[in-house]
Image (tube, rainbow, N blue to C red; front, side):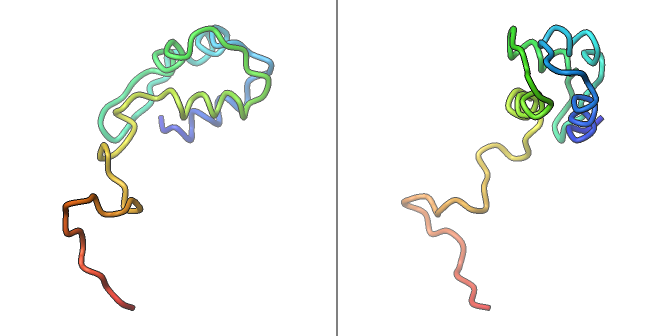
Length: 94
């Protein structure tokens, strides 16, 4: 399942809820990432014992706790300035 599908699951849960309650309900679901996969239970174990008052709090936890397989190219951003000592891309005028 995608992260978006996982957040939809979390929205349907009754709150407040603890990480243990969420893990019991959804821990076996497998999240598919661009560079691998992990279960929702693995993500929840990274957070420890927390209580979420709203679905939004649980969603924010999910997006902040997914593993490095969930990101694309590490260290890449097309918005960062050119690193000092490099030429960088050529300027293009539109």
